[in-house]
Length: 197
Image 1 (tube, one colour):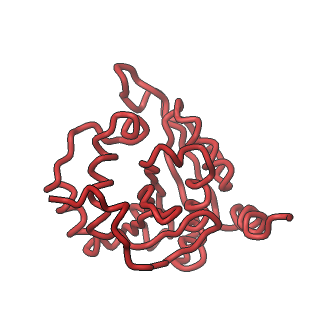
Image 2 (cartoon, helix red, strand yellow):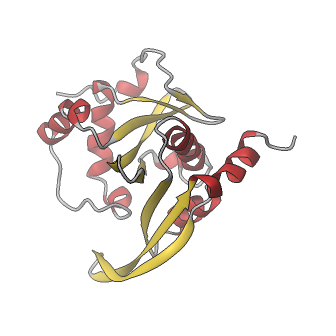
Image 3 (cartoon, helix red, strand yellow):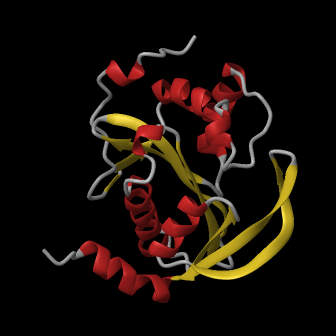
């Protein structure tokens, strides 16, 4: 059984990536209770591709296999000493040097306040300047204005629309495909890293 009071449990001070508002660190076993709650919350999964109920066993197996996945890098997002989400670089094509990004900010208290943007900028810096990727892309359901806006803020540009691609709430929705090359993102990163005071 997971410890559902894990926000109160002092986690080791692991900092893999440090932003202005967030810290990204490896996923820990104590994070799984939050992940399980978020992935079964219809308000959260409405913006993801998840639609089946998930069990503790499913989350435990996902966690146990994280280190074996050579084309995914996944982090827990921490803010105010709380685990607020999961963010990753997925489907890394090492030859082509491209990958997709995905995120769940599961703690709704942190929605729409710039925490996702801050975490995304850190993971993009890691993808471009440590992993030497040249392009990142993402897909957003057309009704997900919050994700669309934060992708644009992070430098992504619209590359196309997949018409009526995604089924949610009894109807089909377009998915917007966004992408960004490292050279397009660098000025955005420079501005974000050195805000005018």
